[in-house]
Length: 342
Image (cartoon, rainbow, N blue to C red; front, side):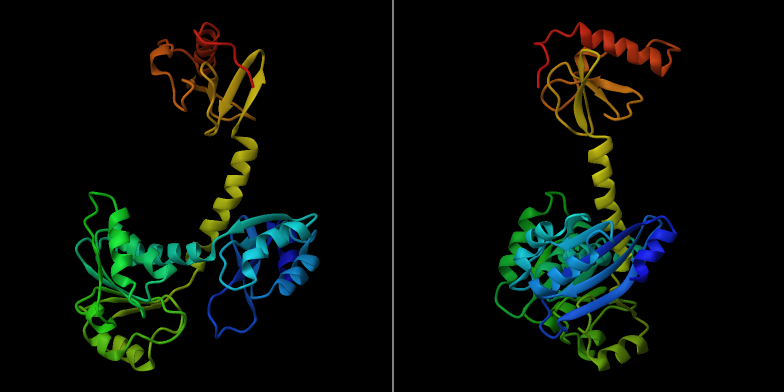
């Protein structure tokens, strides 16, 4: 793999991404373009069957630093992909991601960049499945009023559920439209999230508000006449590119691993227990910024996941961080609690 040599030459991490798809018209194997950031170089495969996963793991194990496995079950075999990869990989680290979350985040980031304020705007999502409902909720949380539409009769139930889980101060609402054309009427944003079959028509494009944003989220959701109509009317027309969010998701997974290994934890040192990085300490533990390389004390744990604000030493005027940390240690030593224990 050229990806491996490129990663080694640039001293970046090498990652093999193995994803799945629910699209029935996709070929059994898709090799996606190499994707990279300042931190990693990644190649990606979209597969359907466990035998393919086994072949990729057998070749990549020990060559790539990481194997990233899509945890979403989009095909009959996919439910076992994570456990199978973990059983086969002996040298490469196995991590999981959710492919649909990458796509949904890419859509949200694209909209927020092109249309920073959608408060009160009308939006339409055609194809309210996993991706469509995630995008509809994100738009409603941004203040848009979203019409959703899908092939079966579940749209009203989904709209009710999405509105129920929205924050009580969320201004946007989600409405089940009777048909795609009704959903698109007057919309500022139109998104197609079917599984690659065309549903966005020229008639729907003509019904949009001026200077609308149209996103082909399912890739292949626009009729050819709709593309011509959108360009003729000066609408913004995008095929959703997941590279928008790809590095964000991968870097987040890598950063979480580093955080757990280097920042988070609970350890005993010099007769006291220290806690950091979200780990809930016992009452009287010293809460520090990092368990591996602590630089300063945040406070004294209250034993319930927070800081005991009533037992924090006041910082002396002009005191250095080192002197303040000494004050915290003194306060923790005298803290009225039971002895710490693991």
